[in-house]
Length: 318
Figure (cartoon, rainbow, N blue to C red):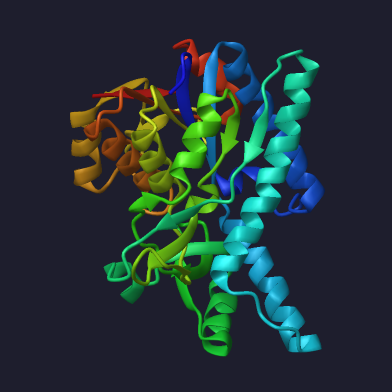
C-alpha cells in the first residue's frame, strides 16, 4: 500500500476537552492543534498515518443541543447516527486543518483528508440489549437519575469519574469506506477516518446500509482499521504516559513493555484496567496483535515523539 512505515493513531474524544472550563469549539480546536503537532513529528520521522478519534463528549453536546431545541423551539431531534456523522465532520475538520497548517509550517508536502466513515455492525449484536457505552458529558448521580427518568435514558457510572448516558456499543465488523481509505493512504494522504468508531450501520439486506442508534468504541474500530490496512504500528494516544497495573493502588507499577500474553493475562485478571478507560484499549491492542499486527504503543499526545524513540510509553508486542 505504501512504501513508508504505516501507523494508525487513535485519539480520545476526551483528549480534546482538557477540563470543564475548556469545552468550547475554540478550546477543542486548540487541543486538536496540540495533538496534531505531535502527529506531525511522526510524519516528519517518516511515518504514513491514518488517524482515528473518539467523539463521546462531542456527540453528547450535539444530542443535548438537539434536545433543548426540540423542547424549547419544537425543532426536530437529531438521530444518534447523524450526531456521529456531525461529530466526524467537526472533529475531522479541526484535526485536518491544524495538521495541514503544521505540515505547511514545517514545509512538508503531504495532503490531509477526512473521510466520513461508516462501520458495519451486526444487527443481532447483544450490545443492543445492554446500552452501557458512556457518551456525553459527566453528571452527578442525582442529575443522571433525573435524566434517566425524564428522557428515558440509560445511565451508567463511568470508571469512577461520574455518570454519563449509556447507549449500545456493538463490535465493528467492516469499514465500509475501506477501499477509499486505502487509496488515499497509497497516494500519500494522511487520512482521518473511523471517527468516533465510525457511524454504526447495519446491512438491511443486499448491501443496503442503514444507520442505527449506537456508538462503536473508537479503539475497537481503530484496531480493526489497523488490521485491515496492515499497519506497522497501532498507537493509542490517551491521558496517561504509560500503562500501569494495579492502577491507583499502593502496589501500582508503570509498565515500559508488555507481551501479548502478558496483556491478555492482566486483562483477564480484571483488576488492573478500568472497564470504561484502559480495558478497551488493551483489548483493542490484543485483537490487533492476534491478527497480524506488529507492535502497539500507548502514551499521551505530548510524549508521542519520545515514545517512538523508545524513551517512554508502553510498548506491546506479539
